[in-house]
Amino acid sequence: MDYVPHSQIPGHKSRQTGAVSLKGIKKQFNFKDRELKVLSEFSLDVQPGEFVSIVGPSGCGKSTLLRLIAGLDDTYDGTITLDGQRVAGTSLERGLVFQDHRLFPWMTLEDNIGLALTNRNIPKDAKAKLVADHIALVGLKGFEKAFPHQLSGGMAQRAAIARSLVNEPKVLLLDEPFGALDALTRVHLQTELQRIWLAQGSTMIMITHDVEEALYLGDRVVVMQANPGRITHTVDVNLPHPRDRASPVLHKLKDEILAELTHVPEPSNPVVRLIKGDDQ
Amino acid sequence: MTLKTLNLNAFKPVWLLGLIPPVLFLLWWDHEAAKGGANALAFVSLAQVSQALADMLASGELGLSYGSSLGRALSGLLIGGGIGTLVGIAMGLSKPVEWAASPIYNSFRQVPILGWLPLIGLWFGSGDLSKLIIVALSAFYPTVLYTFEGLKQVEARLLDVGQIYRLNGWQTFWRIQWPAALPSIFTGLFQALAFTWISTIGVELLFSSGAGLGALMQQAQLQARLDIVLVCILFVGLTGFAINFLIKRLSQHVLSWRSIRA
Image (cartoon, rainbow over all chains, first blue to last red; front, side, top):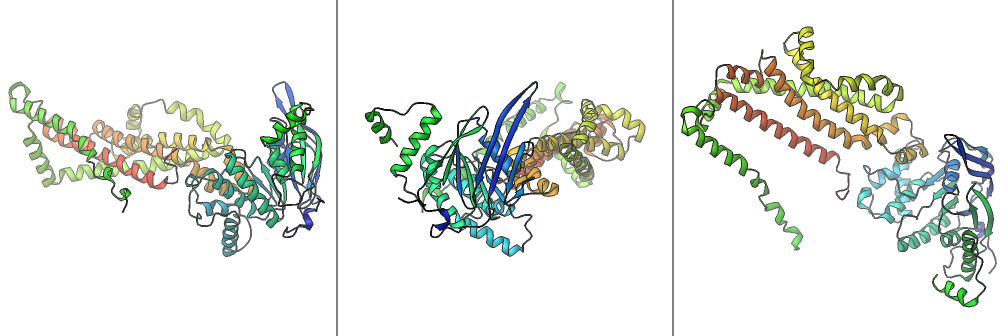
C-alpha cells in the first residue's frame, strides 16, 4: 500500500496553516534544593493538517509538553512557534482537550461549548450556528440542554472535543483524550476523532499511553522516554486514512514500539509472536 | 401506563412521623399542668397558652413584635450577609486582601457574637442600631468564611479552561469562580440565617427596650406570664423551621445542576 499524504486524501479539508515547530525545548521543575529535568532538548516539526501522536511512559513530560504548546505555562527554554509566530500565552488558535472533559457542571452542553466563543468577535447568531454545527459534528444533537452529569463519559468527552473545535483552531492538542474511558467507548471515539479530523482538517497533536491508538490515528508516532523527557525515535505510519484497525502494518509497528518502550527484546520464537499477535 | 407514574413514595406520610414527638410532649405537658399545685407556675395549661395566643393576636401585640423581630433579622441578614459576601469575594480573589484581612477576621471571629454587646452598647446605646449591628455581625462571619473558602477551592483544572478560552478577570469570576463557589456560599447563607434569627432573639432579650419577640418574652418573664413566653418560643421555633425550609428549597433550585449521584 502506498502512502497517501493526508493532504491528498479525498474529503480531508487540508489547510495551509497550522505548522507547529518546537525547537530545543527544555523544562525543569524546582523542588527545594534540587531540580527535576522534565524535558530536555525536545524538538519537533509538525506539518499543517498533520496528525502526530506522542507516546511514552508516565512521567516522560508529555502532558507538560502540551501545556507549553497550549500556552498555559510560559516558563521554559527553547522556542515554540505556530506558523512562524512565537507562542505566548493561550490563544483561540490552539485548542486543548484534557483527559477529563472539564465541562462546567453548572452549564448546559450548548452553554459549555458556547463559552469557548465568549471572546470571539462575531454576531450572536453566528455563534449559535457554530455551536449547533459542532454539536452535530460530534453526534450530540438532541443533548443541547443536557447538563454534564446527565451525560455518559464518552458523550461528555465528545462535548469537550466540540468545545475545543468550535473556534476552528489551527492546531488541536489532545492530552490522553480517551484515557479515562472504557475500552469500547475508546475504540468508538478513536474512529470518531479520525472522522472529525478528516472533516475538519486542523493539525492534531495527541498524547497517549495507548500505542495502538497512537498508530491508528497518527501520521507519525513520536516515542518518548523519561528522565529527562526526550524523543527516542519517530515512526512514520504510511497508511491512508480512514484506517483499518486490523492492518498487519499497524500490528507490526505496535510490537516494535512496545518492545522499545518496555525494553524487552523482540521475541525471536515465532510461536510467542503468534500468541502475542492473537490477543490484539 | 407504567409503574413509574405510580410514585408510591409521594403518598407515604413520612412527615407525619415528625409530629409524634411534639404531640406526645404536649400531652405530657397538659397532664402535668392539670395536676396543679407545685407545678402550677412551671406548667400552664395548653388552654391558657391558646388563650394568650388569641389575646396577643387580637391586640396586635404579637404581630407587632413578630414583625419587628423578623424585619430586624432580615435587614441584618441583608446588610451583614451582603457585606460579608463582598469581603469574602475580595479575600478569595486577591492574595493581598486575604493577607491583610485574615488575621483580624480570624481573631474577631473568636469573640462570641453576644460578647460584643457591652462594647456596642457603650458606643451606640441599646436601641435599634445596636441590635441591628449585632444581628448583621452574626450574618457577616459565616458569609465571609464560606464565600472565601468556596472561591479558594475552585479547582485549577477549571480555571485552565477559562485561560484556554481567554476569559478576562470578570468573565472568569462570573462564569467559573462564582458558580463553582455557590454550593459553599449557600452553606454560609444557611448558617447566617440560623445565626441571625438566634442573635435577633438574643439581642432583644438583652437589650429589651423596643418591640420584638425577645423583648416581649423578657417583659412576660418579669410579669410571670409563662403563657406569653411559650407563645413567643413557639413562634421563634416555627420561624426558624420555616426559614431553613425555604433556603433548602432555594438552594435545591439554584444548584439543580449538581448531580444527584454525587
